[in-house]
Length: 100
Image (cartoon, rainbow, N blue to C red; front, top):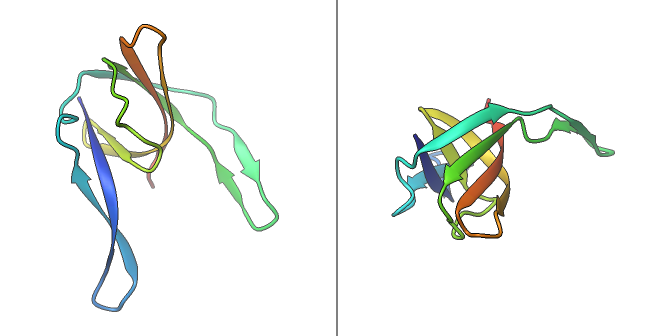
């Protein structure tokens, strides 16, 4: 099952900004299927980072899901890096990166 969470930035006791994730109404315990995808490295002058590591397929059309959100699948958090919908509005696919 997949739950979509929205993040807010909250300062901690030392003033450091920490993300706080909250469940999105209507996007809790959605049936899903997650599969790994080939990992790609992206390079910038300052860093190298890995792009999406998995696909999450949701049975349904969920246009409110955005890239800045997080998908938690079976208790494992993934940052959403991309969202696409099929032409019939029957399925939503998420491109996600495992949070480490």
